[in-house]
Amino acid sequence: MPVRPSRALLPFLAAALLAATRPADIAFRVRLIDPGYNETAAIADVNRDGRPDIVSGDSWYEAPNWTRRPIRDIDFANGYVDNFSDLPLDVDNDGYPDLIQASYFAQSLTYLHNPGKSGGPWTAATIDRSGPIEFAFLVDLDNDGKAREILPEFDRPNVPLAWFESLGGKWIKHVISPRSYGHGIGAGDVNGDGRNDVLTPSGWFEAPADPRSGEWKFHPTDWDQHPLAPAGPAPEPATAPRAQFGFLYVVDINRDGRPDVLTTMAHSYGVCWFEQTASGAWTQHVIDNTWSQAHTSALIDLNGDGQPDLITGKRYFAHNGADPGEREPLGLYWYEWRKAAAATPANGGVEWIRHIIDYGSRMGGGMQIAVADLDGDGDLDVVTGGKSGLHLAENLTKSLTKK
Image (tube, rainbow, N blue to C red):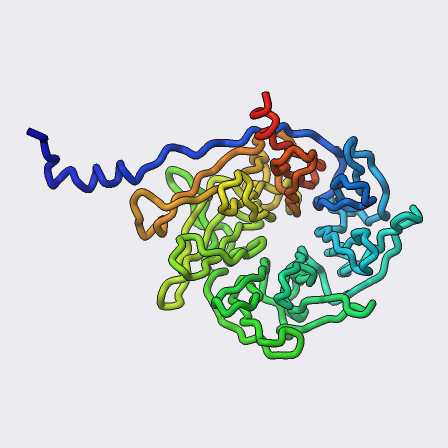
């Protein structure tokens, strides 16, 4: 006669059935490409030889041996190379990727033309000089499926929030709001109308039917009112009066049909997501608050399971040692998420698994994380810049399976 479990055991058995083993890790081999300062990292086939190259600040590095080639001189002062974003973009449609760079101290957004076959110097032209730029991103704001619009985050509240595009050989500036809204920016469809909105730490701007001429409606939120306290047996209070984010991603984390917001804390501790509830309110959930300075990130399917993963890492001496946790070890991580065995108000029904790409060496997150298959073996490699050097983390997944 079969033995039936008692009713008291049923919840525990159900949880056991829902529990899953730890997902597989990915082995990486880390290589130092350049030991010098450079906060940025991007990937593009600069010389059109069919192999992706690495771009970082004043130079590009030709594959496969990562031979350094000059782009331009960039000012260095007070521990900073004055370039905080490298955005490859074929502006003139000649087949060669050009470069958009964003500077903080020179307060400029700059277009650098790739000389292509001529092999001459890269030529620079100013796009905008409105104010100091913390970082900038290529996003899709005209909703054509191509991320060709430039969205900078200006680090002064009196500088207009704006995006830029190149049309007919001219740079066009589109003002969303007469002011800016703090540290962090993003783009994505928050309300599910098929148009990409613009996100700020204080709220999001709903994209009009015509993003070039329509009015962007502001929806205030309290996202920046939720800095995170560092983890510990007796957690300390949050060290920042307002949260300072990196990029704000729009993604349905808990698969309830409502877009959520995924982000990192740029100058303090924490990685988190904001759940959009049925009422339209937002609930913060902590992903990881054991390390600080997650200034940049990338959202991409690293392990090939069909769901994007979050790659982020610690920036080295973002404020020259003055930020919380700046003197703690560097690390680069990737996070995947899945349905939690037991949903709680704290986890929002989601379990996050942290995987280590590198820890305790010179490789961190810097100001940009670039991801692509650099060696053509079918898996995704990771490149980061930083004051601790330019690094490549080679994904060994395909290499190991071939043995």
